[in-house]
Image 1: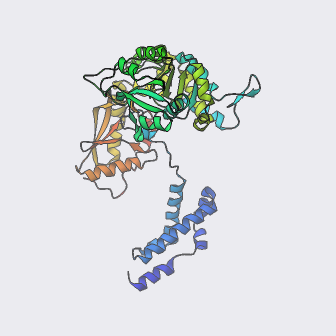
Image 2: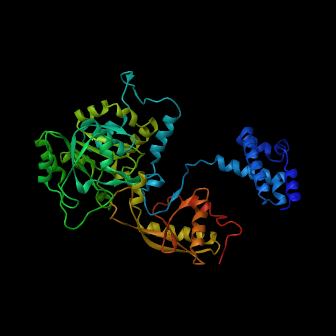
Image 3: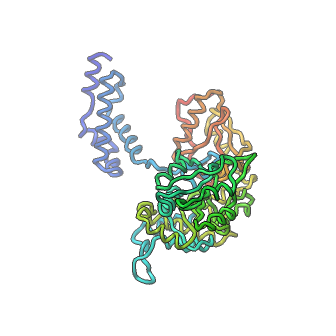
Length: 475
């Protein structure tokens, strides 16, 4: 661009007042507010001047309608929430990066109800005085697990931290080397224990730990014995571990509590629904555990939360720890968690009411039918850019639950017609750009969309029009 052309472009830039009188601006001001519209226009004008200075602007870019159109797009983008609903078609039902468990309608309604105004969060309606926010969850946890008492914090890592800080601060905790797990985000059990103030005593070996190892490790400085459920991996072959009942006997003989961190945790045996068994909270307590911690947003199927259940005297001490206040959940979490727990009172209907259990137990025939419905529509929307095949796949529970136990599933396999990886990347990006983004996974030169967690096919199908924008490469 010559100096003359550049000067002409600068001179053609319309004034802000003129832009505000452009057709459609009144509607934008009504929708987003005048201040936000002015901010968007100024941002576009600034970018336009910089681009002209760099010599890369076409004459039409400075037209008022073009500027108004870009500003409208900027406003729409800014108004879109960063945290959005997505279709999780990754084959991982409880995907940590995608929000883990979908909530039951009862939980969603409970959250909405308490969000609208004041609630009895910490008020005892019967006695007319201050109450305990844990009480809304505690009565359900004790009923369903057999625990004497319970409390709730904002996640299971917080639950572990609180237990250790309350009962083992500056004292020793014996843990098998085979249970020093690392959970998502590079959070390691030894690091959590150190932050909680506990002194880790490693016992046994990675693959074999015996009762005598625990007995030998316990001394005057020992505060508790801890067992961590290895939910996100499995050691097989020449192995040995100590069951909760035997470990409880060792701890109790020496006057120490046994703390079991179940991680994902479950209130009911999943084998009831044909799924692999996962240790339950009630079974751990029945075996002699004094405290059990577990998550609310994994197999339990509720919101993000950490629960601690067990002996009443120990729970009382935990509740008195000042750290408890820093880790407590808010009213909406408690409302959703209580509503989720209430569903467990009717186990016969649980699979139809708890989304995570419903998704895990969907029969293969249902997934086949779903694939035959949405597969052709998706292929048509891709306009020849990819071939879509309905294939067998394997899903997993996710979030550390039964990682070596695959679940039979079905998936749509998208193979770019060009065979180019760049086109596969482009297709995945377009799916993520839909009003409700679609998230799959890449494998062997194809994009896989696992159907086990697709439970709103109407919305999925309704947004496929215009999946590929004009100009997208086709074979």
